[in-house]
Length: 333
Image (cartoon, rainbow, N blue to C red):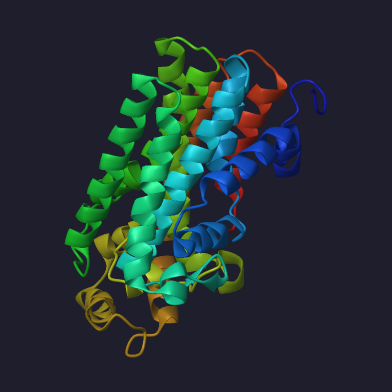
């Protein structure tokens, strides 16, 4: 299926039109595989499925599979696997962060409580591996197990840094790698495996998606300060309120005065914007050009993704993968 003229970059709608049938199959697979013998697990799985996620991760897997070959039943199943894994991380993240909202709705921990959500997240993790096991492919299992361990380690590292002001750019990059870029890279690698690619091609697509994921997380950190709450689907300024110093603030703190640093420390200590209003923190970020610096850092990653994808022959799927880079860079939520 060819969309647009040769060389034309797709819109988000065109990308998902290109994958429409496959994504419907992924949705169906997620629905079937999220049914547990315990009603609470099934309900939480369905709640997350209907919460309006962009399905970017399975779309990335399917596009990479089609770029190098075909997206057969294995790609559909693994598209469901990566989305179920992602859902499991969201359930656990909301418990750890004591989140109140997710994508504009009450978070799962608010709806069902921490105990049920922790166990439901565990079930979703195991279900994802159960589905992947049906592929009878040790390489696929190795990718998924290594990824899951890396994401859990990322959460532990982030917990160790909660409430600490002295966070470096390198610290932020490490978390972006573990929490987001690794998952993006594995999605692309799984797509390459499903499409019959050799190891060199798999590495190349993994590198493309890793850089994409790094940009995604860097932009995500920025949007926590600059997006509207209605658009973001959760309160703005939530990261700092939860005790997390992310890249925009790291850049600002490099040049901040002692008084400005104390402002940040107050929010970290109180876990609220009662004493120091959010607008003062946003003004601090704007004062030291942190927004521009974060955008430039994101563009370094997306530039690498574009460079890698430019080496592939022109096709609708190659153009779609270039367009995904633009969408990540320009998104507002």
